[in-house]
Image (cartoon, rainbow, N blue to C red; front, top):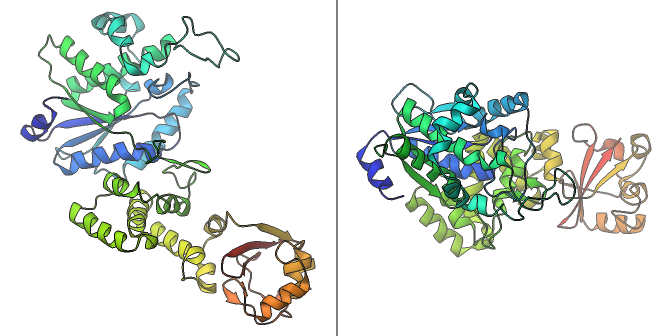
Length: 428
């Protein structure tokens, strides 16, 4: 928006905000890009506000959505809000200084705002034509009456009045923060441009043309193929370790494509341009070493979770994909991380009473249903050639008794066949 850069340069501290939708118990990678806007705002000497949409979360933002969303109850929304605030506190400095961050909840000013009062004080200032011109609305306007496609909750086209009103509510958020906290800037991803400019327009009209407000948006984070960034093969990548473990989180960034990582490291980290340029030179000299990906994954995992969690994720990654890792390293992994590390390998269960009376060659062939070795003789042959490891230690002989093997967490054996074939055997 014209004037935004000048406003930030000439008025310090500027109070700016971003809204977060509390329809999930955790923020995700997509939210992290906008969180970084608040981080940079504060680092530049301005005051960040994080608005948790307790009221608007009851409705649902139509931006980027193709269908009506389910509405959540107040108790669920409040629980989600608490989780989101805790995550934001990892990135922003909350104190009483002029640049101290603040979390606000729009339910606080909407809960007593009557419907008729809202229509009189806010609704009359924007025409339906203005609201329908927004891309988020135009994309949802299809059939004349939005007939149900597969039932009352599944609409092929159209938009309900509830979601249509969302931009008015978000616009009034900006008005309220402008009046009460001197907030003059709203930020967000580019798909929020329509909602944000509704707020700047309301401030102008309610202020008789004198109200000054500004907008700043960042591009949506997409992959080089144009698809949305933030999804893994198993679904959304969350910031909550209970939903996406630190190891899975680290692996997500470690697996970033070479075409994507130069942009990602600039968006998601606080590394300086000189440092990033040096990393890019090293990466270009040996792309297979994944220098950029490792720097990105370590930095983001450290800030989202903790430096300790990042170190554990790196150690776990080295066990499976690097040259590091021995029995002690495996034993140092907690059980959830161990299972994360070997989530993609075959997991075989053998009755403990049966396994402990066997030799290794029999365990790896007959007892595991011939899924590791098709026969005991083949197992014996590779073991004697030094090609089999259990818990990262070479098996010395086919006759090693299973009862003498160290079990991980009292029940797991990590079997490596050759260089790349892994199996997780669980004694139950």
